[in-house]
Length: 265
Image (cartoon, rainbow, N blue to C red; front, side):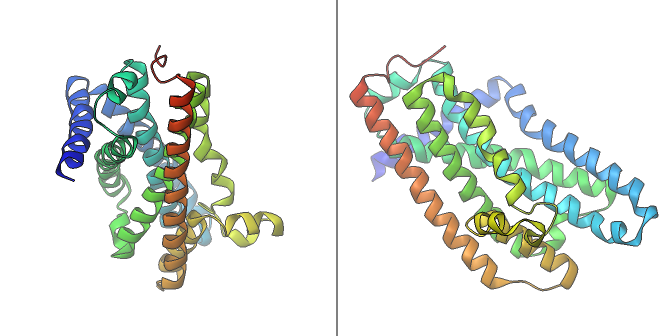
């Protein structure tokens, strides 16, 4: 077990050294969430005097934006951490070492978590500085929201990383776009009830829908829906297990096909 922890630590430290040698790798994690937050923040400030409903909804919109960025940044940070190994032609070198596929997956998950935190914590403080809104006002449920959304984003990132490992860099676009397909049915800015019935069925199979419904419940009714959080947590765990198994399956398939050593730019 100590050997596994050492190898996972080595993967994490490799990515930390990459960030230290090129700060621009981290700027991307802050830049896009900050741009979106400022754009939506000023839009809501403009609309607030126009209608009392919009005035009440301003915090809901900013909260939805920041929580959705947890999903986006989690998925992209994991995908980028894996793609770094492909871009540097390091994937083949890793797998001729004693490292196992699950250890690599654990390492890039931890690296993705660190990168997400490094990006979103400053952006959440900018939201407070610019608009006087603190997402931390959600209280302890915010920790649950963050953990649930991160696990779900990792499941997508692991599955997409496995796809890139098997198919090659032609599948990179899926790594960037996969999470955005789910945004319309996640209820980020509106209740799930506004969707057509058949889309509501899809939404209720996603942990994101329960998280954003729970967020609005706290902000509008001051009620924490623990039942929603429990369902969302269970779904995220299931998706994370499935995502890891997909990653493992693609790894075994790539090894049989002999495509691991041929990855790279």
